[in-house]
Image (cartoon, rainbow over all chains, first blue to last red; front, side, top):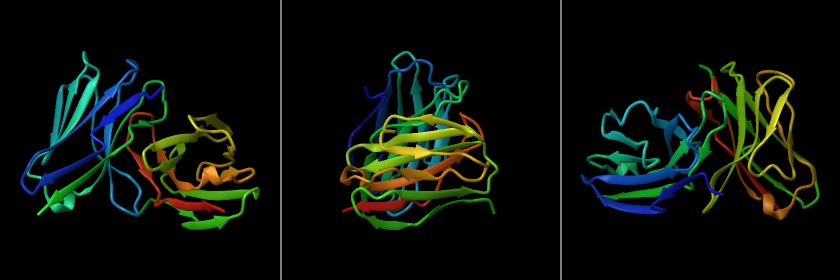
Length: 113
Length: 112
């Protein structure tokens, strides 16, 4: 049973466009929803995270939108740049219970110049 | 600066051999995790630990073991390596369950 479902698997966006990656979760006990960015040959690194008490969080060109009732959250990358080309993972955990992060399968983003 | 390091970065081993991958963090984090990354599967949790002497099984723990004798290290052992365990392995650590997890650079393991 896949607890965090991520789509699309791959995404091609033109420079300056908006990249949107979606995730859905099943466990209503999850209370922490981060997005990680991974470049080839590197470990994943935290990009932005949200908790379910807010519906949106913005950091620069990156925004998380969170819909608690639908059990969905998404990453929006505004004004996408070639340097944003990477693999993006959504994840979820139950921070109160201290559970480990459960990751989606990842989305490979290519931003064409 | 605090960091998390994995060694070796690359390893080739033969089927049936015991292999140990090292993970060392200087963040003084209680939580440590091992994930494997495979194309089409993303990052899957193998084992994790919330402190010294604590270990827990993750989603894909069969064939793997860990031990936590101090705060800094969580070595991952493949008891009898199998070709299905060819993968990239990532170690991570965090201060708490809902805080940033820091990942190592990964170990690429090939079982032949």
